[in-house]
Image (cartoon, rainbow, N blue to C red; front, side, top):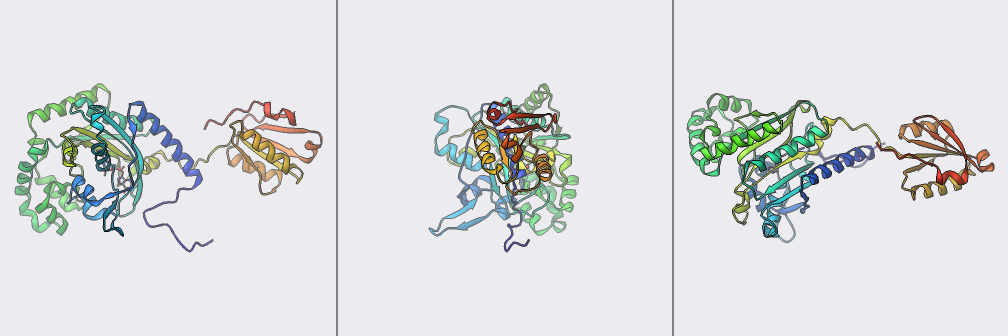
Length: 420
Ligand code: HAM
């Protein structure tokens, strides 16, 4: 069968069996994030373009080439949100959440849009879940945020995860470091691409985001680490974060190259990666952004958060080929069984059971095959002979035990709900 239209490159239709699995994981994520005392926040899908330019930074990959932006009929410059930290902080400031409590813990799970080159684990519409803890400057807050991300992946039994962590210090050392970085790299200008030369000139820290192997090699061999420029206070903060991770039994690698591709970061940066993902191996990324609240008009407020890609999590869970189980499949044999079958299904659904009724008038054998495929826990067989005798056959599809019961007893039968 051909369709006249196709979905846009980098987007996906999610069909019922995948929706079912995704929903189960989403429910789990809501539960685990709430268990840390974080409250859900939902912000609009689009915001003014300026919010992202100011928040994320003009020379980042996201802002310079990946945003879906347009001028609407009223002349407003709008953008489909490419990330959620800036919108969450916009909402935090706008609704003066700091007046309610000196610490605000928020989480989200929703869709985002980036015009990136699609590949495994990279889409143009994708979903993130994440948290933003706003108000504490202390290292225990860093440790809590990292451990939440870690705990989500651990609880879902994601194998081979690797926590990479670094600190890029406070914003006030950035200028000095960037001057040193430029000094050490200027002589390679001829070897760098046009884009990387622009980065070198305008925001040299962004060279670490370059996907060009030549640039990465030059950095490896010549660039100083920002870690070596941080103040004693920031170093103490970082060491305390590492000590807390140790006591939480979270192992990590200190990766001095990890500066993360968004301009708002200060101090701690981290990513959790999985070997099963291939090139796009980051399951989540995050860090401190102690200046962003102020930069977006609020009072100086320390904050830290992370966001994780839901699609990447689903890839590593390799959990896509199960289908939604149902409690009961009603097998109908002969036309006379239809009226009774539909009525029984309705009444059982009112008892909070999920029930599928045959709609294709197929043979008993193919209905049974379908019941197996749908993972039904019970079948109820309704044939014309049975109806004449006011009887019904209930089959437990797991134990294979069959009971012949009176039709009136069906509503009192103990169906064990499908827990999958
Ligand atoms: P990010 O590193 O841009 O950070 O994205 C976080 C995660 O979102 C990535 O590690 C990845 O799992 C997923 N992701 C990003 N882009 C795509 C894509 N095109 N397709 C599929 N998955 C993707 C942020 O967004 C920051 N706002 C994180 C943060 C929160 N920092 C502090 N608070």
